Length: 604
Image: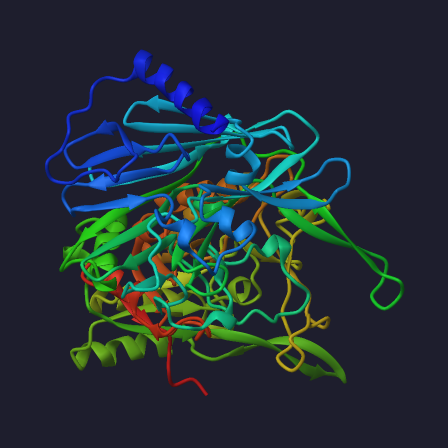
């Protein structure tokens, strides 16, 4: 009763001083106990002052999306903390300053039950201020409405920490739109090509789905390659409930996001989808040599980011346009707009120029270049396909010595493949037959052999201050292959300079460039205290914008607007035990907007 009285008084005062009357809507009604705070032509935001639940009513779709299940009390599956989770709008993980231990607490237990929550009316919606008094941490949650969606977000600069305890991560609206045991439908997850998890599929032993958006952070790469999950290249989730749907997109803070999905029967009786966000990164550092009293300690990022938001935008979908196909079309329109005129249907070719292999010279093994597809052969293939009436787009990998050894910067033609004269002839042939040829050079990773880039001054660093290393893993053991030197990756603030030089060199050569890993590799750089993946994402986006439309291999969402053609589009998912079906969501999203091809299926 104290909590109810406290919240009601706070809200009443704020409403009297800041809230204008909101017209009632005849199309859809708020559930019992909710008060309207804001309304536009499509949406109404409501709040229940007795428990801090919020809802958004969609007048176009005719549905109300509640932050928490209205019948949570009757859930016999949920007990203890899982019962209070059903009443929560946030779940936070905190690093205790005194002990170094981590603790996870939900907003119901950590704030609402303690009476340390405030409700405020803001423009277009609601602000809920959760103070986790035991930790001295305050997290604001906003719920606002726009023309075609509603947004739930946390501004990074409004998170307050008044003790030695630090916020590590936060899950936003974990129960929003949850479906029960009697509902029919599915959850769409961005696993590889895309996958569907059917409601109430009984796969409770499979656990929940959780994947880092844009793939695992290579800054924290494991020493054993045991991850069989495909990358989640799109920051999107979807829920089909038969006669309506809900698509959720991480529209800000996506570089720090994880996608979550679970079916009923594990900890409670609801099928859920949500996003969680990393506020501070966690890494590991091993002291000592392996098998010799080695000890691994946890390292945490010292300072949290104070810019941007952790934001999820929700797009309700009407009956007849709410399946995964409709979600793919809606997301494609959102990300790429109307690009139908650019979506050419072409056959995708990939030329492998050369490899390096150890060959004996006077009894000494010497790394020597071996030609696989000389420039003249590539030109001949293009002419034959033109004569056969086959339109093509080609990618030329390992097209010179620098590209074959991942030495960023070199654009000189390879004598092994025919030299400058043969390459000039190839470029002229490509122009004559109308076949775009893209020469691939990685824009982010570079070999330790690269004399133009110093790993201790230009390479991104881990929380331990050592350079980030990209290792090759042995097929037989899945462990790091110690016979192959690791590659390194550029600092976020060095990407623009290095790439600008690279692009200028290609322009002078008269060749199209594909910037390789710039489209699909995202990592953190902790050279500065507040370093994070958002800094690299911003640098890469600026780079791709300046480079112009180019060919990309299975790009992440932020790179797609700059793609002229997409290769290696995934045709499968990870075949997770929890999932029921693979769907070509990624491909459908591109269809009619950008030309694309899947990975080769005839490789030996």
